[in-house]
Image 1 (cartoon, rainbow, N blue to C red):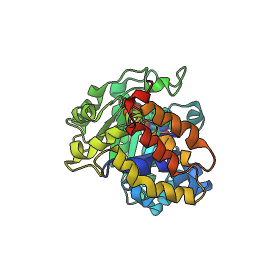
Image 2: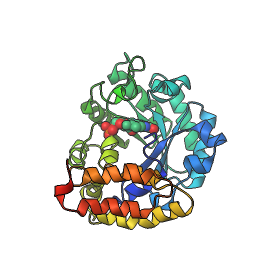
Image 3: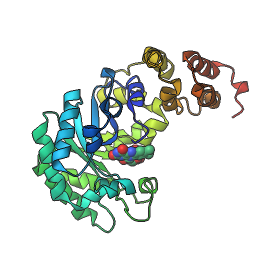
Image 4: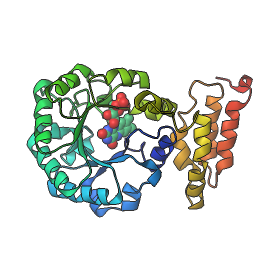
Length: 318
Ligand SMILES: Cc1cc2nc3c(=O)[nH]c(=O)nc-3n(C[C@H](O)[C@H](O)[C@H](O)COP(=O)(O)O)c2cc1C
């Protein structure tokens, strides 16, 4: 998720689930090819398994970008066919590619020829006035024939005119049944569901008959729920008993970032959703959002914020 699931976010989430597949923000093929690769696609070994999501619509550049990402060690290459933003439409990629299954298939075929790791596609049910029954099948059939290793379906259409990207994550109604019908038609194709899953329990239930689920906002806004992922989906214990232990174990990663001249806030901004609803959570957030952004802020700020949570609840105004 753009501006959210950067490398620090992903490394932090990894301290809450050892097994979930983590995704980068979308990065365009052009940026991968011509941009600052360390900044754009650099990641820490701790993040595995990690998928990079590419944006683009030119088979040759997507293939080149996929190769670069695979050489860097990404475990999966995912193509974005779901982003509705104007900037992306200007580049003729993202959700508007729902109208061009043949082109997406060419992209997938080129990426598949370039890398050995799985190539997957994240798409919508359709866009604008498309009939989702037709549009999703057309896209899925085309990319599967081109060799796609799986589909992640954000289970709503996108409106390319008149709705902001944010509205496009809320307003077109969700239709999980449509994703199940796709899976019934393509039983051999791994199909994952995304959209509106608010908890791990919801996600587990929605996954029945499918191959995977993808959590977006819920995982970012309430990262503690990731502690349930390994037990519920993989039948094993989470990496740490609770969020306190997960944050403590993450301290060396933060210390290394600070030692390289990085800012505390680069990392703690992804922790603001922790401990939601718990006494002291507000003070935790406030301290991180004020003291944590100061130049030179160090681990002591994070430790003090955590101590706020353990302090008596009477000081927690709300
Ligand atoms: C801030 C933000 C950035 C996003 N960036 C991307 C992106 O880069 N690529 C993508 O496929 N989806 C992106 N999305 C959409 C989510 O991946 C997801 O499809 C959508 O939010 C619905 O799932 P959810 O209800 O679990 O959040 C973004 C969503 C948000 C809130």
